Length: 620
View 1 (spheres, helix red, strand yellow):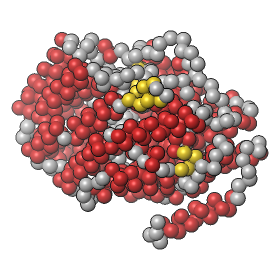
View 2 (cartoon, rainbow, N blue to C red; view 1 turned 135 degrees about the vertical axis):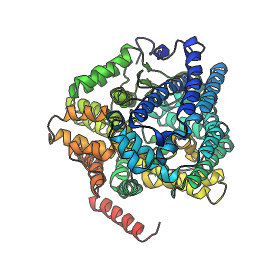
View 3 (cartoon, rainbow, N blue to C red; view 1 turned 90 degrees about the vertical axis):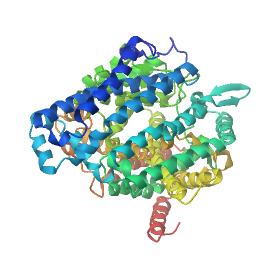
View 4 (cartoon, helix red, strand yellow; view 1 turned 180 degrees about the horizontal axis):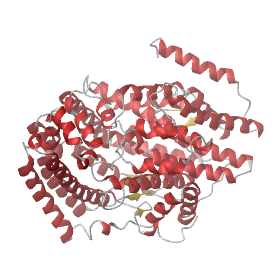
């Protein structure tokens, strides 16, 4: 594949002309003045306000948060594409410190909202200009049992400057500055992923071993980071009175601990019938007795090794969105037309991909590290799904545009499914269809099952850290145990992949974020099935409406128009059933084509039953 032109870099001038512009400096000053004014006018007075005064205060607070979000988003976007630029890094750190100082002056706000008597609070909600903020206010009041005093909360915010915030920065910069050597040529972290999609097993092995080698070389640093993140979380949980490491995240996601546990249990109970079967087939397709860790995403010998140009990928994704909803496609088009997207990998740029919502008065941005693989096309669809979601939810304003993690991945995964189904519908060749199914199933296993394995890893690391400092070998042992459980007996996991835990940024940036991917994948599978079966009238309109609601409703209410209820015990198994159906289809096509030997179906079923019984008996 040859790119016809350089990949786009994002244009951040919609936020600020530059980091040293007068506009940025003025906003930075105004944030401080606004914070001082707000604290002086409202601190200690919330319960004495009239409904009209309370409504006015909420609007002022929302406008102030909009500016804070704008500055924070700009700094973050600039930082992730300039990790090797010392002046930019200094600018970002100085800005963050200033913003932290200013934001601490709003600490009283949430605390005093929770001090408002229930009858007074209900009186406030009767005012129409307060009522529209009801979801936000109720979310704030949920935190009452877990809140600290005004002074303690300020201390917590200030301490973060030299605490967890710094740990995240150290981790990011350490990874960004690591270099990997393949056949005498140096590569950045963001460039290494392409090697795992090579059809040459030696190339994959070199890359996998090299990443593990360099990461292991830096294990002392990553071990300190992991211990510090877990210990910091434990301290926070004790002070905020959360029983489990995951509970704070669940509360912020407006989801019950029991629902997340049910999700994790359902996924683990399906390891044998889905991921183990898939990797068994993949080993046979590749002619290997066992897969190595880095072979999981290897291209298939009967699959296409096609590379996609940027424009080809863009057309595939936009067409898939357009077929479902012209409105969504038009929004996605804006990212390309207006350079709201940063396309390719380069030195000093963070690896991976994300979408940044920014502030509601602006628009989202998308970061990719596109290198032309089929997976990169899927990633483009995924991140544009986020971007569409964030663009639509802007109308909810700075206080309610943000979507809880339980639904934050819905639009992105739905976008991937749209793209996949569009490609599958156009393919008639059995081998090509098998390759598409295998690629999609691998992605879904990575999303629904691998992320739960990550969740299990995080849970055990955080629980074990309560007992004392973890050594690198302890972390590696936990990682190996959780990875082997989901990968199954056909994937080899040894010392050459023992330190891949350090390549999990979510565990450092946002502990216990990862289950949201699995939550969304299972949810989207169920939702897409409803769409395909045409069980809901005006599905597309209802779907766009759901995305537009941002964080103004919880996931249960959001799902009602589609006839779905995630609190029901069989909900997760239904979603996982879609993935199991793909594995069933692949097994049949593969056997029909003579690519794999007929499987003893009862042995797979028996493995799942044995694992289930062992778990019920409390044995490993």
